[in-house]
Image (cartoon, rainbow, N blue to C red):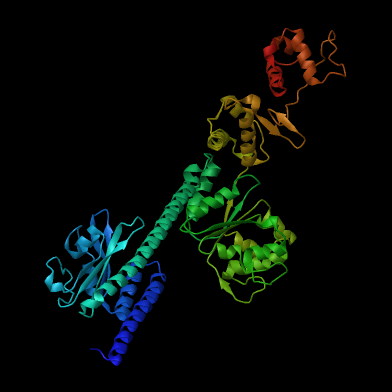
Length: 530
C-alpha cells in the first residue's frame, strides 16, 4: 500500500515527464521553423529530441517516389564520417519495421528490439535491450511521406504509449516542415527556371545574330562590340538620335561576363541635377523633404552588373564632378549620408552631342570626357548605310508580325520607296514608318500605297520632298492655270481629257510618263476610275 508521500512522489515524476515533453515540443517547433535547409533542420530537431525528450538515435526517412523506397534524410547519434554511407541505406515498402510503418501508415512500437525479428539494424546503432518507436510522417493527403524513429533511453513499458503519442506530435510538425520546405524549393526552382529562360530570351534578343547590318561600317561596329564585351572597359556609344545606341548597350551587357548581373538604365536628360543625384547615388532617410526612407541609387542597383547612362552629354558641370569620382574610384555616398560605399559597376554611356566641341566651349569637363571615352563606338546614321534598309525593313516587319499576331509582309516596291528617303530620324523613324504602314494595311501587305513619311510640316505620301521639275507651258486649250485648281486637280483634268492614258497626259502637260506616274503615286490618284 502506497503512503501519501509515495503517491506525491509518483505524481511529481509524472508531471515532470509531461513538462519535459511540452518543453521538447516547444524547442522542436523553434528548430523546425529556423531554416530552409531540410537536412540541417532535421538533424537539429533530432538533437533536441535526444537532449530534452531523451529519445536517442533519432532517424528521419523520407519516401522517394522515383525509386520507390525510403531513404534516410537525417540521423543523430552517429559519427559524421558514417553519415555519408547511411544515405545509401534504403527500406522498401513493407520491409523491416520502417517499411511496414510506411506501408500501413500506423505507428509501431517494439518493447524490446531483440524480441522482434522484423527489426533490421542496418545502421548497427541501436541498443537491443531497449524499446523502439517508429511513427509515420503524415503528408498533405494523409498518406505518409516518411517515418520518424527513435529509441527511448528507458525500458519502462508503461511510458511507451505516452512517448508514442509524443513522437506522433513531432512527426506532424516534421510533415508540415517538409511540405513547406518542399513548396519553397519548388517555387524557387520555378522562378530560377523562368529567370534562366528569360535570360536566354534576352540574350538571344540582343545577340549578334539579331543585329542587322551588312555594310562595312556596321561590320566593324559588331567586331568592336564582340571585343569590348569581354572586358569591363567604359564604353561611350555615339550617334544621332534613333541610331540604336541603347541596343548596342544591351548587346555589350548581355554578351559580357556580367550578363547574369543587373542591367540598369537611366536617361540623364530626363531629370534635373537635384533628382539625378538622388536617382544615381540614392539617399538616406530625411536627406530632403519627401525622403521618408532610405533608398538605393542606380549605382547600387547595378552592383555586379552594368549601368547605362543615356544622354550623358546633358548633365551639368556641377554634377560632372560628382560623377567623375565614382567612375575613377568606384566610391560614393548616398545623398545625406556619410558612409562611403564601394560598388562594382561597368559603365556604358551614350550621347548624340559633339563632346569635343562641348569640351572646347567649357560645357563638359575634359577629365570626365577622357574617363568616358575609353572605348568609343560611333554609330552611322541610316542615310549613310542605305544598303541595310532592305534587311532592316524585313527584320522590323517580322517584329511587327509577332507584335500584332498576324502575318505581315513588305513588297519590293515599298522597299524601293524606303530607299529613296533620307531618314532624319534614322532606324527609329523607319520602325515608326513601318508600324504606321502595317496599321493601314488590312491585308498585311505593306505596299507603296500605305507608306507614309513625315516631314517637319506634315505627312507626305511617298518621298519626303517631291523632285522639282521644269514644266513647259501647258496647252492653251485647257485652262490649267485656273487659280481654283491645285496641282492634283490639274493632273486629274489632264488625265480625264486624255481618257486616263498617262502617256498622252504627259505630252499634254510637257512631262515624261515617269514624272506623271510618280505624281499619280504620291498624290494617291485612283487610276481604277478609267
